[in-house]
Length: 210
Image (cartoon, rainbow, N blue to C red):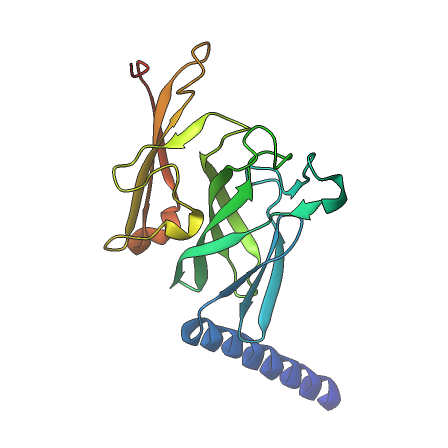
């Protein structure tokens, strides 16, 4: 019986030490974001690492080819940048932006364009997803979506998205050049002081600009 109690005590202490170590790492180190292939991304904070598959959350053509140069083969365009990271209440809130090639044929329609998707993640101490939300803010081939915010032009890349005084606010229009579809303007907001609320999105139907 004493051996059982001793073993349980050791297990409890080990678990406590591991949990304490993870918490300490979350307070000391920022998450390193490393894009992988096939829409995946690796997150690392100290010795804690995780690989997340976000391929179904992001817009664009992950694997592309060049029809004008068949010998070039297929190319993976997976790319992620970290926009913000907040540790709060034992959770980590991470805001990423993916920048994926828009058209699958790089020498075809939208071949030189990129799709941008904002991805908000709520992570536990093991950097695993507890909840997420993704919003496509720019898309060419897969949708007529263009950023129209005063401070951000459609030519900007994902790495250009920065917080201003701890906040991110932008607008994008949908179906600007598709007269047969309904035109709308969407506003996306994020506040790092309330990172747990994630991306606040509102869409308004409008008359198409002349």
